[in-house]
Image: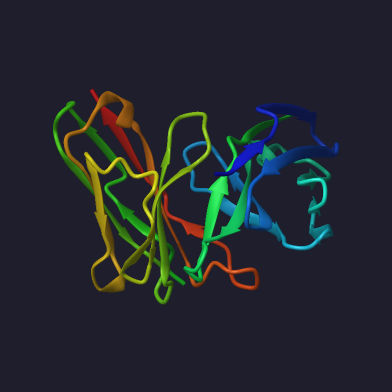
Length: 114
Length: 116
């Protein structure tokens, strides 16, 4: 099976930078994804790392260290609209199925305050 | 491009009743997922289809839950009989082909089920 650990809640000030960490334990690991979910909304894709290093998409960046089974999501220039839950998710390959599973962590609730 | 469509958006039923949810994935997406999301938790995979075949249903409570994907397009998830602990949001997602170089999973708005 898979297990993912991320902080349950984070609070940060508007305009600041926040980092949300994720550690995972799994076999057949292929990559780490990040999703954002506003209250009552659907999860939406933010980023994906298959290789070690940093991926940058606008104000959001994501990092992966495969040797440490660790990744993080970095949000810069925080805005009030960034208040949401953020989930890390591991992609694991199904043996012999030619398909991949997407398993989510429990999520980090980010509150951005003025 | 139309997104993943789900219906109904909300459903309230009494325990021991049955309920069905419908999902229409994005056109051309071969992979379809049903997730259960209990309030305050992350989505938990119930079943994954590749075209009309089941790839993984290891976390589906098969004594009460069933799902099908006829013709590899639309899918239906059914609960019979429902229990109080089934109260959750049921999310359907689809992807063209979830692989390292392919697109991510796209989620529908979900069906919020309340069992009373």
